[in-house]
Image 1 (cartoon, helix red, strand yellow):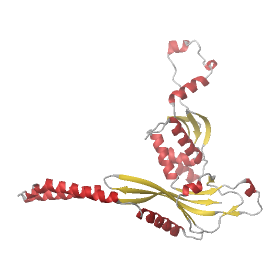
Image 2 (image 1 turned 90 degrees about the vertical axis):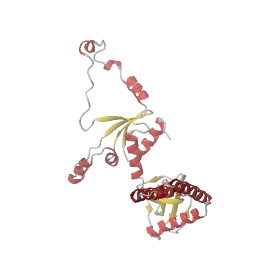
Image 3 (image 1 turned 135 degrees about the horizontal axis):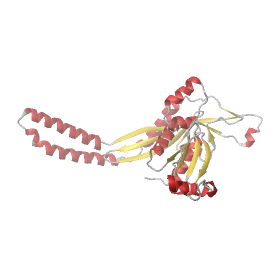
Image 4 (image 1 turned 180 degrees about the vertical axis):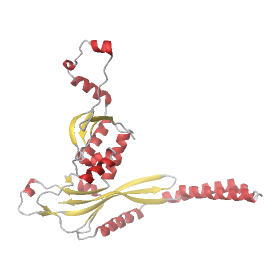
Amino acid sequence: MSMSPDEILRYVMAYLRSTGCSIIEKSPAHVTVKLSPEADKALTNRPYYWSYVERTGVPAETMSYTFVFDPAAYEQLQQNSTPAAANPDPNGLVARYFGAAPALPQLGPNRILREDVSFGSRRLQQIFAAAREGGRYVNLFEQAGPEQLDARRPVKYETWLGVCFKVEFVCDLKREELHFLGISMRTGQIQGDFGKLLAGKELSPQLAGNMHIPTAKLPLAAAAAQLEAYLLEEIRERDYQWSELARERLTEELAVIDLYYEDLLKEPDEAKRTAVQEQHSARRQEMSWQYEPKVQISAINCGLFHLR
């Protein structure tokens, strides 16, 4: 799997916007941004600074970056945007006699650091991790239309618990599935493909105007349990021939191991025979762990979605 510079740009921009960063400048090759406190905490590794800010209450100064996704195009853009008149030594006399003067680094709170962001780069991996951590639990509200904002009475939200489950069918082979399920905290209705219900809706972490959140009738723990039961029932109805074939392969592999150790286990020296027995047992356990069919279920992320 890989990502093009354009795909990386779109992903990074989505992360920067979702965390409230201020975009200073943008082109198809780069983006210059002043990080929000949330993004600064996730990306800059400054725990002592943020501990000081939170302890003293002083205004926070977040860092600014230029993330470059296409270095060649960015360099060309920089050259085209630099006017010739800005060169104080047009004839190159100073450089000829004294050499080219290195550019001075920008220091102070307004400095902008440059980083090239490509697939596999440390910074992109860090943004991936921050997005996964920040998106693990969400609380989002569907935004009201203009007619609702002008209405005389507020409208009630319907709160849904949405959970994205990963189901892994594992033996010596592996297959994964994602199931995004939702359950109404008011009626207990379960939506098998919750993503379709959310498609096209404008969601925000801020409560929309002229909207009201009623008390949920279904406890959160009970809602989660119902989603798990729904998913388990769906999984039970699958064809599990793959597990029978996996056990057959396991039986064959164990027979090969037993045949290999058959003569070795006849070792007359007790100490050596004990060592061989331990090795034989370990090989059987290792093969059983690899081939024994199992189904593993985990929740990747979840959230409360307040929908109109």
